[in-house]
Image (tube, rainbow over all chains, first blue to last red; front, side, top):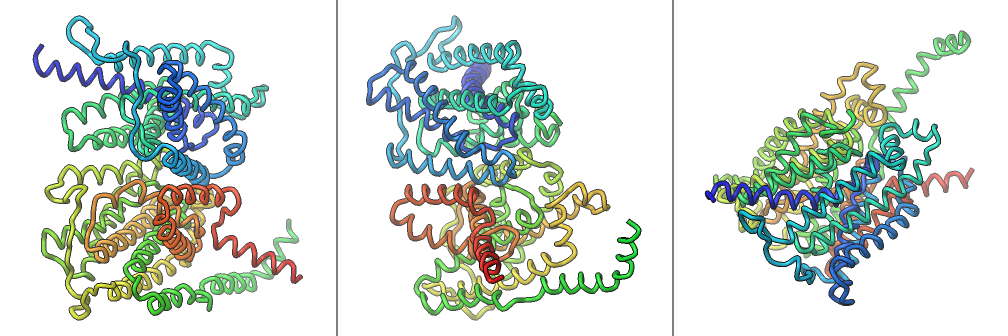
Length: 290
Length: 341
C-alpha cells in the first residue's frame, strides 16, 4: 500500500476510535446541559472516577476488564445521583458563573482526593488477551483495542439512538430539551427525567474513563485535561443533540488525530482552530437550537 | 396615575439633586479605601525578606482587577483571560530576550498596547456570543495562543520559556535587588495608577452602562445603548490591564514560560476574584491576597491538600457566600445595623 494511503487509513482508524471515546464520554454531558442548561465542569471528574474504579477492580480485586467497566459505570452512575440531588439541584436557576465555580470546585476536590489515594503517576490496566495485539482486517493490521472501541462505540450509538428516538422516555427527553416549560405543563416530570439522564450520562462518562486508561493513560489531571475536549464536543455538536454530539466527536477525533500525526508540534492547535471556526459560523453548534 | 405624575413634576428638581448627590456619594473616596494601600506599605516594612512574593501578590491583584472590570461589572464570563496576561508577559519577555529592549516602564506600555490590540480583535469577534459558546471561544483563544507559542519555540522558547531575562534599572536609577524591594514598590506604584484609572471608569457613566448591560441586556438595547461596542471597549481595557499585569509578572520573575497561557491561570484569577467578591473593586485585593497567602502556606504543606481546600472553598462560596469575603463583611455590617435599630 502506498505510504500516503497508509497514513490516511491510520488517521481515520485512530481518529474513529478516539471519536468513539469522545462520544461515549461527552454524550451525557450534552444531554444534561441541553435539558437543564447546567454547565457541569465536574463531568471529567466522573470519567476519572470511573477509570480509577476500573484500576482498583482489575489490579487489586483481580476482576476481569469488561465486568469492571460495567461495575464502574453502575457505581459512578449511582453516586452521581447523590451529587445531583444534594448539590446540583440547588443551582439550576443560578447563573452560568456560579455553576462553573461549583462544579470546578468539585473537580478540584476530586483531583486532590484521587491524587491522595492513587498518587500522581499514570495508571494502566491489565487487558484480557483477546484485546491485545493486532487484528488483521484483510488488507492490513490494526490494534485490537482500538477496533474494539470502534465496535463498542457503534453498538452504544445504536442503542442510544433507539432509546432516544424510539422509546417513550427518549421522546420525553427530546421534548424537554426542546421546550422545558411546555414539557412540564403536559405532565412530564422533568426533574426526575433529569436525574435519570444525569445518572446515565455520568455512568457513560465512567465507561469512557475506563476505556481511556489504555488509550490515553489515566492520572488525576485527566479530570480537567480532557474536560476541555468534552466541552468542545458538546459546544460544537449542539446542546442536547445526539446526532450533533456524534458528528462533533467524529470531527474533533479525526482532526485531533490528524494534527498529531502530521504536525506533532502543533497537535492541539488544529482542534481549537476547528472549534473556533465552527462556533463562529454556528454559535449553537451543528444541531443546536439557535 | 395623574396624581403621581404631578408629584413627579413638582419634585423633579429635588429628585435630580438627590440623584446627583447619591452618585457623588458613591464616587467619593472613603477613609476605608486607604486600608489596602496601608497594608501593602506596612508589608514592605514588616516582612522585607518576602518582597518577591509580595510583588507576585500585587501582580495577581492587578490581574484580578482587570477581570473584575469585565466579569464583575460587565458580566462577561470568560475562561480565557490568561490570554492577555500571557501576551503582556511575552511582549516584555520577547522584547528583552530577542530585541534587547529591556527598559521596564516602556515595556509596560508596549505590553498594554499589544494585549489591548488582541483584546479588541477577539472581543469584537467573540462578544456577540453568550453562554457556553463564549466560554469555549475564550478558552480556545488562550490555548491557541499557547499552541502558537509552542509551534514557534525557536522564538518563544517553548515550554522551557525565556529564562534569565535582565531589565534595565528603573528610571535609569533604581536597580533590581536580591530581595525584590525595588520591584515591589514599582509594582505597587503601577497598581495604584491602574487602580485609579479603573475606579474612574467604574463610576463613570460608561461604568454605569456596563452594570446595566450585566443586569439587563435587553433593556439596554431597548434604550439604545450601543451594547456591543461598550462590551468591546471594556474588554479591550481589561485586556490591556491584564497585559500590564503579565508584563510585571515577567519583570519581577525575570523569566516567563508558556504556562502563563494555561487554563489553570484563567481559572485561578477567577477563583481569586470570586473569593474576594465581584463588582466591588476591592474584591480583587482581598481575594488575590487571601488566595496567594493561603496557597503559599498550604501548598508547601501538601499540594493535594491545597487543591482539595481550594475546591471546597469554591463550593462553600457558591453555596453560602455568593458575594465573596467582602460580601460576608457587608452582610455582617448590615446585620449589626439591623440590631442597632
